[in-house]
Image (cartoon, rainbow, N blue to C red; front, side, top):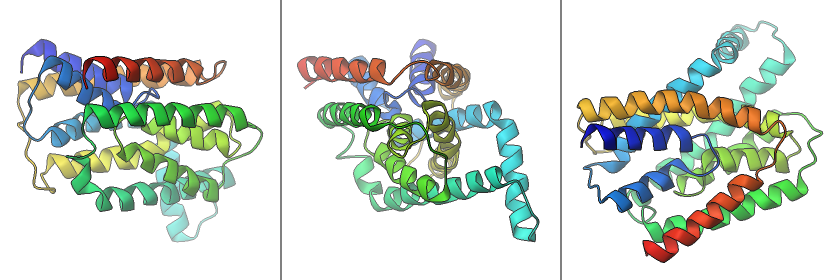
Length: 263
């Protein structure tokens, strides 16, 4: 793969991993449009996810330092600030559904789910979820461990390409009463264990796949990291004063284009 295509794939992963438009869905569509055939595509995608996981870690480094301290404080029986303790428990509980369902649906993720037709369906269903979330949003409640678990089930929807991890978790947060800013922040923090874990599993071939570690992958990975940082900052700023409507319409239009030209 040449440098230009590596940059394109890296930029697509970095932007769409955090914007509510689906990274896996866009990577599948971009490959279809460009006619790319990459051995072990799921593994290649997951390596790029490591770069976006690093972007989350760097952007929210202060939060993660607090969470790591809180984790060991809880283990040693020390008292910690309630808000940090709640966040820690919410992330732990919220990670469980995606891990469990990811292992359960592993065989389908690299076959049945990875087609343009399937992506069209999930783009539209995801848009419907965003619409419902905006309609029922109260934005007057706080995060709890129980809500973290429920948002984790929304995160598990991202196992279906075209759904969007950030879109699903932000929608879940809105449905459960969080503000858009709270929901987006928790969405990013909750995404780190899954994105990082998935990337490591695929990188070391624990699922039996292989991916070539070469210059093209390195360029794509670096691009994904920096674009990911920019996407995180943009979405946090955007949701302070805007709804998910822009992304709803983007997904609907994209589904229409894919249906007309790629199916």
